[in-house]
Image: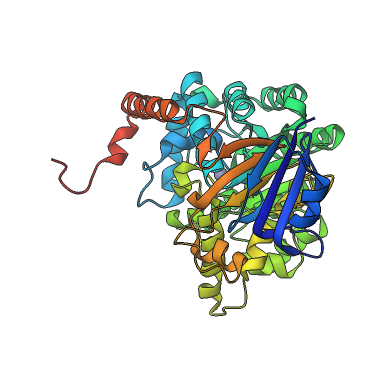
Length: 463
Ligand SMILES: [Zn+2]
């Protein structure tokens, strides 16, 4: 049995039901689980000889951040969607995904996970991709906790046609999703789970959606789907589905339910939000794709979702949308963006945002009993933040500093499932330099081969 004792934390933020924060806090980990949380003087007595002792003096300890919307294989799309409206970026996504080979998908996944761990993320949720065997392998090797899903699409034409290589019939998509869930749900000692992905509302027939929901209920897993992220897609959806909005149609087809995680929901009426509430649908907000002018902040729908009691969590999206996998940036943008839009500094508190990246996310991912807070019996996923850095000092209120001041790169030590995956800012589960060098080469090759390289062209002369 491996025992870890993290001790002397200046602040240990538990996110337990009482939201206790321990000064001079400590946490003991045994065999992957949190054994105890409390004051250092007490835990030091009870755990005299841990196998690993981590000194968190002048540091801040939190639960690991949960990134509930992370396109893991998309990392090499970084920098290729600047200055375009989201729907105009979609053909670039399709070109990328249909050109990506297995080796590139593996490297992209590894780079994505390195960035996530470096920024304090311990759990990701991928909303649907391809080359899943490689993605699973990358997650397994890096020691990340993840829910992965295989993209299911059975509408191929429309404003942004799906490339030939990714086209499937309803039956084939359903079988591929089921095969993936059967193979990988509960994989790697339970650290990896598998869900179904209805990739987008406009690429899913009601037949596929209904069948997937039934299968997900039967298998006890969730379904994730991009829904109503942009007014452009909502309008297109109404055109092809007899005037129904995505949420109206999903309700009619029996797809709404507590195990549905809806990505986006920037464009939903009060009535549609009520439908989501009634079915206890969860929502993941991705403020970082505001750079593609989706309306993520501007519509202010997030505030309404929260007011109605809907569980909302956070995600960074993918490198093609956000250009950054830093969940601390996502928290910052959520906090300040919605205050500004609402002209109300109290509408989105730092505490609400940290809940969305931890306990609320755990609920949204149906993992409430396992992760999201530092409580005995839960899996040991935690971060030691280097609060001695200039972006943290002075630490008067650690939650304010984490959400408003810090960079994700101040994550110093990261533990996932009771295993130290980064210590003193050194990734222990991968040869980081080697992987990133390979990613540089692979990205050059992929973007030139696919024709995507022109989208990275500099507007200024490069000499
Ligand atoms: Zn997405």
